[in-house]
Image (cartoon, helix red, strand yellow):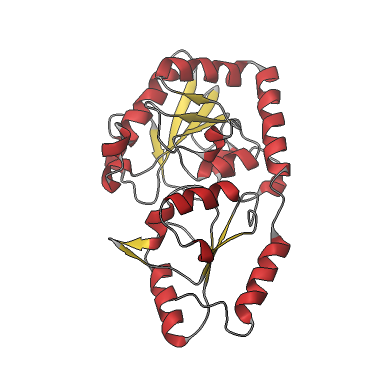
Length: 272
């Protein structure tokens, strides 16, 4: 389930399933936006069961008021798009430059999240641009489907709509706030960093579990980028962290199969 495109389509499907007596299942793939995925205003819009990645996701969801009977920890469904490609690089699409850094855009201002966070997507992108100033680097901004080109008008980066994974696979480093694509980038083997101009109450799980480094200022991010771009030993250290995290989250296919069998059995696992 997701919130990027057609984010109410799933909720409509769950309602239709309930009317038809058909059991429904949502499969989570990221540690963000739990309530946003399952609420319409103040009202819950829930499937019969929700398969979650791990105990951390389940604990966070319980804190947000989810019914524990609907939650089942099954493990992650997929280690990330194209992970089998082993982090290979595609041909550059953005002209000649020594380094390419991709910033993952998000619609913080349009969603109102910036009011709690204290910064928006353009503030973060400007911070990344400042951090890159000492390097011969090109900044590519991968727009979230809910972003508009105008959201980053003063950031100084080349803005690109997500079309495939060239802007991630072709990057020397990927930087984001708490984007779900941070996990994808990590699993694809790209050096991945988090940037939080102000500490988030609940940021990316990759930061909370110290899988990826986090910078709280443009100066700190500049230091991390220097290590990523210029020091192979630092990149190898990041790769070891990635391998440990990914190997500890092997596919939860069998647990998911059992959950599907439960839903398909007598009573269908219906939750009122």
